[in-house]
Image (spheres, rainbow, N blue to C red):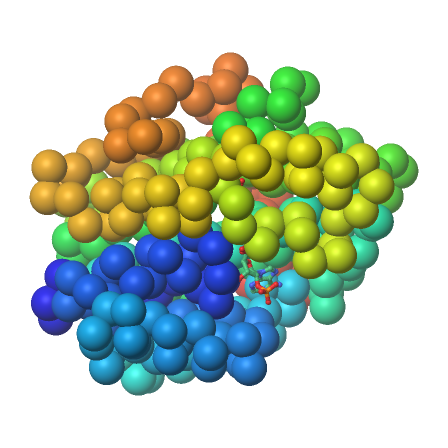
Length: 289
Ligand SMILES: NC(=O)c1ccc[n+]([C@@H]2O[C@H](COP(=O)([O-])OP(=O)(O)OC[C@H]3O[C@@H](n4cnc5c(N)ncnc54)[C@H](OP(=O)(O)O)[C@@H]3O)[C@@H](O)[C@H]2O)c1
């Protein structure tokens, strides 16, 4: 990974941080794109030590604010001028409905729309850095969105359940991955989605999730794998030479896995793309491509 620039969102903890350690140790210039600069600074110190690398930096990125996403993309372009691997990893689950700076429901806004916009803004840079890769951290929870995306209430203004909304955004991660793969020449940029497995990370443990979601999280904790193990397929997708040109897949345990019926829906792939562009344009942050 010498000479390559890797950008990882939500890299101050869990799967993102372990991905950063591994890729930095392989020689990549590693950018931790995080919303909390204090936490990110501590994580960068840890990543540098564990990876024995000085080429680790922090860029401020709050996916719940499209202005922050735009500023982060500009900083990345100005500072490094290339992106070889973009790992869209940050994500959350919220028991109570909250909204982003632009008024979108937060789970959709952070887990999908913020990453959709970040990727759009970095796409020219990725193409110019070809062969480049986008890795979207989804989840097996995407299977729980059995009825697909809630097109008639995408912002869950009428009805909200943290787990349902989370599963829909993880479905959105797979649909977005497929949309990207359809639009990009795989010899230039590939896009793949990944299920990291159930991981004993900070996920759902920081007070954002309470009630049943928090209880469920605590109960499965003894059966979850370490963040290092959870990051394994994410890292594999970011660097492994055997994957050159492989695009549009959903991966788990270093193998291509079958995505849900809803994720295989081509119409949903295109509709999510169009809706995402429409939503971005509607709040003054139009997609650039
Ligand atoms: N853990 C699991 O069992 C599991 C299973 C399947 C999929 N996943 C997926 O794996 C990914 C990483 O999760 P994890 O398990 O490593 O959990 P984690 O330790 O909680 O990490 C989540 C990261 O997302 C960041 N984040 C949240 N909201 C953000 C925002 N508005 N802007 C920028 N960053 C934001 C968090 O930052 P702060 O520290 O500032 O909150 C944190 O760095 C998620 O996409 C999740 O859906 C996890």
